[in-house]
Each structure stands twice: as C-alpha cells, then as structure tokens.
Image 1 (cartoon, rainbow, N blue to C red):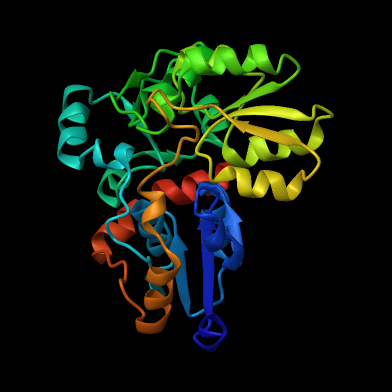
Image 2: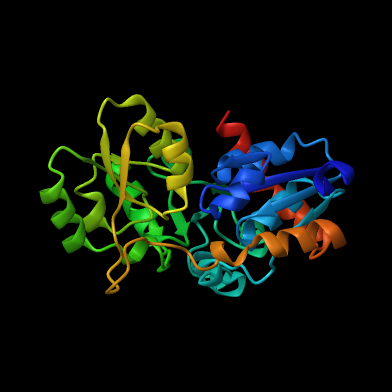
Length: 299
C-alpha cells in the first residue's frame, strides 16, 4: 500500500532475502538495476541491495529521491578501494585507463574511464584496443578472469569480495563426487581455483539464464545464496545445491551486508522516506559519465 501511495519503484538485487525479493517491482543484477533506474518514472526509488547500488541509482536519477533501507549495508569490494588510493595509482601510471567494477563508491567512479558489471566486463574490456594499458579495480578475481579470457595483462587492484573469496574448493569437489552429473555454476568474483572447475562462469543473471536453458537437473552454485530464490522460482523442477564457504558448520554462503536489509527497515524506509542517498552535484556530474559510457556499450 505504501509503495502505491508514495509512487515508489522498489528494486532488489538477487542476493536480497526472499521476503524482500517477493515485494520488489524489479529483481536483477547490477546491470539490470542500473538500466531500470534510468527509465524509472516513479517519484521515489528504493534500492534493496548494498549502498553503492543506491549511489548508482542516484547518479542516474539526480532529481529523484533515492532511498536505501540501511546505509550501513556496505561492500567489501567498494570499502577496499578508496578514491585517494586510486588517485595515487593513477598518478604512478598516467598512461593507463581505469576500468572500475560497479562495486565501487561514487568517488572511485568519478576517477574511472568506464564502469563495468560482471555481465558486461568481458565485452567492455574487449572494446579497448589490445595495446591499451588498463588498471582494473577493485576485484582481482574478476580482473584475473578477464585477463585469462582476453590474453591481456591489466594492472589489478588487490581487492576481493569477501563472500565469493571464501568458497571451499575441498567441499565443492566433495559435492561433485556426490552429484557427478551436476554442473558447477560460478560467479567470476570467485577464486581461480573455483572457476577452473566451473561449467559456467557468469553474472547472477547469466547463471540464472544458463540454468533455465540447460537440460541438466542438478547444479552446484558458487555465488551468494540469495540467488537460489529466483533459481528455484524459474526452475522448480531442478535442484540447486549451495557450495559451502570454508568456515566450519556453514552450508550456505551469505553476504551479511545484503542481509542488513529487513522487512522492518524497508517498512520504516517507505513510511518515513529515509535514509536518503545524497551526493554532491559535482560528484554526480563526473560519476555519471563512465556509467553512461557502459550503458551505451552494453546495449
């Protein structure tokens, strides 16, 4: 009711808790949410994800009110790449272009030549001439995967998603022995040792679409387990098994930042129209350029 009364577009990432995904008008990966934000007609946009996603929506909709249920829903990738440190790296390597993963702050996007998501990173990096020197921030796993696929030697920032970085190879191989016919689906933020065994490496949207297309009925999944809600909904006759993290006693790999958004916080957010994402206009004007460039190239 509040959503309707207040003219709200509620968007949720695939990694959100099930009860939030159920309420969302749009569920998607970072690229899908960015595209939908551009075309939104609603007065208010509520982003259920992590904070940089709220910033991206605000950058693309500077005149709209953009809300997030919890401002402390951070991201280990974004938090591990500060604009001042990237500035120093740029100064040391002035001839390099900066390609930044969407999991970065607005200030880092300002310093970037183009932004990428896991859906379009390969395509966008391939759009640069082979001899172009590139700094890729902040995910060394995704950057290493792109280097391997393209034969490039991008300079990689030493960051990683704390969730995707902790999948257990030993537990994955044990599951593969138990389910020999299962296919392994992995997000490119995973470590190389996991990706080397994957039948499909892709963004959340890509893994979902692959599972729908394939006749395989069992999948071992190496990405944040929130995706299972949509996977089971789209493929009710298939079995999705989480690859566990290295921690003892953990069966599913969950992002605690994504779980900070709860129904209670979402209700308060809709009712009181806070917390609001606000960015200085000079940040928005600069940060929008590499995002728009990405959206142009990803059409």
